[in-house]
Image (cartoon, rainbow over all chains, first blue to last red; front, side, top):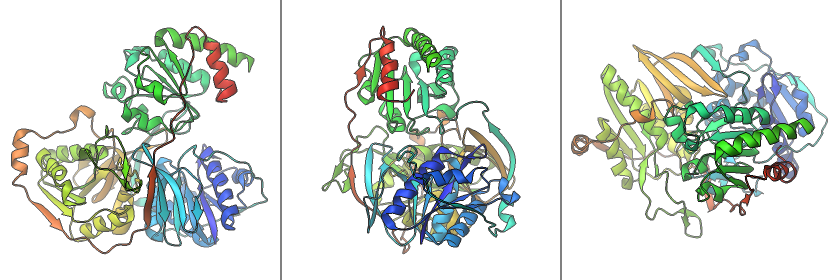
Length: 322
Length: 248
């Protein structure tokens, strides 16, 4: 019996989510005595995972898997699980992970929960905490049966180094090639050179208080200095000031960066539901009564058009020194 | 074209979330139940496609009779017929089995849902239904066009979008972006009157296992009070972010 993580990559390299899953798997391994393994689709640096306690990586290097197919990927991961005797599978929250994991859950007839934010409270029975009601509650959920899949919420566990000896094994799953033909990819559009919202450690987000799309220059400048992604509130996306892909909130993206900076956003309950898993929240708002201050760690009461340019200057000076 | 919407009924987005029976059960006192917001995008797109290509739109919901007013709302918006599978959706797996069994007995060209419900946020029912029925599936759909028996589908990927083409039938989990916010349909008086006479068939649930149990709920820990920094002393803020929060 073993624990298996689905280790995803960004630009060919094992990404932070994969390292977080590895950290979680190592802890679970200590608790259950099961070894912690990983499966990767051709990452360039699979041995990175040994640093976080993974002792074996099955690396799938078939050219066929250069194209993503949820069904083919799920089949390959299920075969890697079979190969390693995995009973517990850990996955992240990327678009692809959310897309393919239900296929494995159905095949395994597994207990599958997403949004997991804690180590198991007990392993017999197996109980974890997960987010529910769009971050307005935390549920204690028991997973029944001998196969379990945990979708770990981003940034909820953190990275814990735990070096172990490991091996990388080339793995060739036998997948029906017609699975790749279900869909024809017509185009892929990706914003280049920008930090994506889901990868971002820091997010700079603007609201209606910015008065118009022409005022986003300072938001982008602040984001650039901090290496941050940009985001916006629902009204801003609805009015077309910014693309809806930037909308964070209950019906937009749910994010959990280390720092969320909200500028000119009042903090409606639906917005908070999308951001209150952030480790730190900084609110800049002209209205001292803005509800967002109640959910914030740090706040500045002031006009964004005055505060943000000043903050940019101060940060430039700070970055020059550090 | 026959279109099906798999409907989820959830507490209104502004609801205060509380629990009862020693924090083991969601407290529905005073809760306004609504169409799951992600489903609204799919419902509107389904109506637009029905109007453009002709055909019928059906709605299926797994849930108790108390949810019927919300099902009627989809009929008032323009769906032609609804089915309610009469059971409490115990968990995602159980719910997916109900929907998969329903689909096995019927044929639809296009099956839509929302990407997740805003109450339990599992985000897995549409994918499970696809796996159980063998019907093709795309998650997190932000664009959909139909031409003959071909669907062009845009899905959200990390930092962008991917556009795919496939033949029908297909299951699609929609979300914001599928239609514009201002296009979202709401019922009008004529629709509400007509909905009263549209069929709402009640079906018995299938036997299905429950894989997960909710033992108890808690509220997220309260934030400690905000540390306010004077706008004229932003060095202090940078110091806090650097030395206390350790985020810059």
